[in-house]
Image 1 (cartoon, one colour):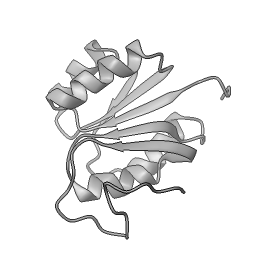
Image 2 (cartoon, one colour; image 1 turned 120 degrees about the vertical axis):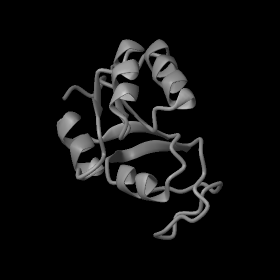
Image 3 (tube, one colour; image 1 turned 180 degrees about the vertical axis):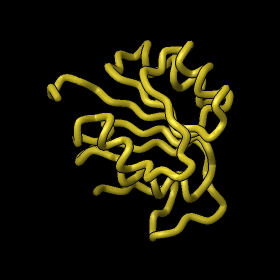
Length: 121
């Protein structure tokens, strides 16, 4: 993949996630990838500009993101689902030096990540 390609992943495609898909495209994301277990939300996200969308059920989300980005990983991940497991699996798909934005916080987060603090990987 070319270094100028910007990959943005939106995890959780409810109302906030749908807005994030549109804003990512408007802001210049080259490729927008949606992740949601509800198929009709993926259909809506595609109409709003998502290039890819997949159901996380039975899938290693991080590996799927790596596959769709040519092993680069996502430059930006926007987590809007509020599920701790979704956050942890999405982190594996983040590019080195990438940014993750927590829009919806899980009550319990596993693995030592503390939402609301700055983390560098």
